[in-house]
Image (cartoon, rainbow, N blue to C red; front, top):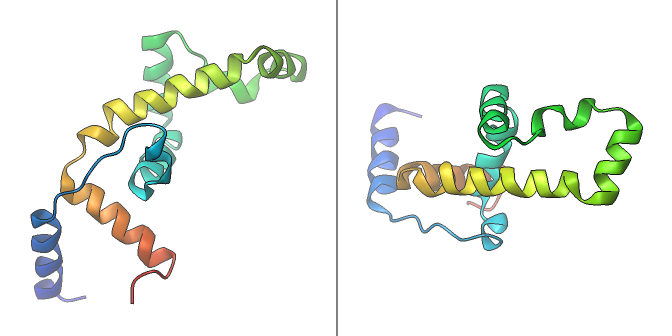
Length: 116
């Protein structure tokens, strides 16, 4: 892709407002899912989240099988994950510039062959 085409795409993305969705509707937004994917791949973010909230997202998978079973039965794991999802939604997704949201949506559409 040449520089002229890239600049034209950037201009269009910058000029297009990108609505943000509240939870749980945000689960259907490719931009939110991209934020979640990136957040889950960022150990520093997970460590900071755990430190700030007292959660244990970073260590849930490392727990002993019996501990994971107890976490599942008591709803502890689901509660921890809900808190992390809300954190990503409120702290990252809602604050991204429109250009980033539009770029995530466009990239998702291209990956899914939805753009001609």
